[in-house]
Image (cartoon, rainbow, N blue to C red; front, top):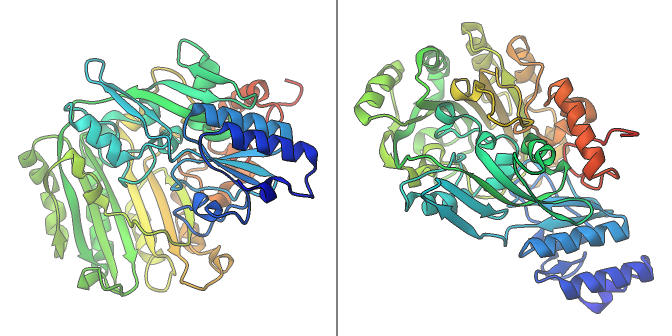
Length: 474
């Protein structure tokens, strides 16, 4: 941080002294608007969200996080958290100190205990590679570059192993959390259980999670990949998939994606500017069993590309082939209570070149997702049948707000099967209202979270999120 940046004439001596102390005490960069590196520090995957905090702190360790939180308290700033920039974030405003944790990438594996301990900047490919060396695996998301901590705090629905093992949050055994007073707390089901259970599902409302410990599984390979079909077969493939999910074993995790992609040169020819369908499949059993299970899907319609085969778990990212380039997009999330023939028809009717939607992603839940956690946490909606995600990429130079209602027609068509509940891991920026956020929790859980919030963050310092306000007079 430069001298001029510290001495902002509009802030006063307290501001100057506090930021000077922060810059001197932190190992990582402390950046204010206009400084070199400020914009890069705030970069996110969805470019529809832009951050403009008063201060950005690139934490290198937990001590940096603690110092940053204490400084925010001194200056009366809210605290926002940016782990790896992939989650649905809310914009940090000029009354905010934003902490980035992407530099915090320490990781240890205990093969005897089948656990891993990671810092907040660890991404899934790093974790999967490290655990695979010991014949073990976490519950990975779909994208190798996604941060493990943010994903897990929202519940963590693994498209690779989730139906066999449930929510990733249910397997967390310990957390390191910096609360609003700057204290570094080691919490677990045995110590600080109120905070431990609140953060798992309540996410960044209670502090900055700087480290996490969780269980691993003896999985090294899978039978999986994707089957691609022409968009003209959408209705047929959706119906085949609906029937498939009614009997799929828990070792089979799956989803279906509907695409309307522009004619990009690096896409397969059948997807360039044309609707397409993809079935994503991950089976933990033997390859011959998996092949027999998905045989009806291969016969449902002409398969234009087939990547399903036996793979090492380290190749998990190849199943979904998620995009890696940042882009502005509008997101919508929901949960389906059921997938019926009428639901399939509504999906097929609501998605097409005229819908304006770039991607619809439907993922099968149920299986172990419905199991209660061994230790209580705030991850609910465990009876949901499917998660639903719709994304509209905003063309270059276009105003994001002009696309805010994209997907609304599809969700209206699906209203008869949409759950009244939401899920903490499936919330968009548009869901960041008190009415929408509280739908992610059962009423009694929501009140418990508000009580925990009142204890650890009574001033609502951590409010740049899907906010859970503290109970009054708690």
